[in-house]
Amino acid sequence: MLVLERGAAAIATDSGGVQREAYLWGVPCITMREETEWIETVSTGWNTLVGVDAEKFADALAKPLPAERPPIFGDGNAAERIAELTVAHLDRALEKSGV
Image 1 (cartoon, rainbow, N blue to C red):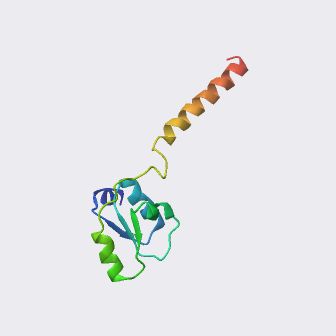
Image 2: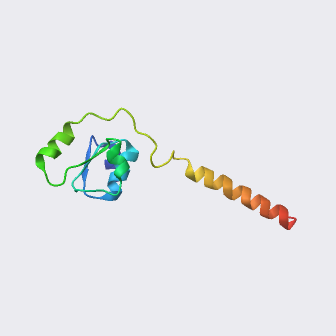
Image 3: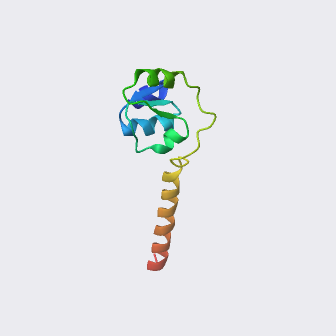
């Protein structure tokens, strides 16, 4: 599924998770719901809520890509930072234990 999302020109979905994945891939999303938990994707222009309205769907497909895609879900480096903090914590624990 992720390979299909990554290579898509646009994604139509009613899934909350797919809305977020579309944003992370930089693929415009058309959400066939009236509301979303990922309001940031809508406010940045990468996600359009259309419900079941065919005209809104067509309009969403024709929209140009937004100029920017801010890192609303982080910068992609969380795992690296967590690993660094874990190593630092273990180093301190070893120092305290005298090992």
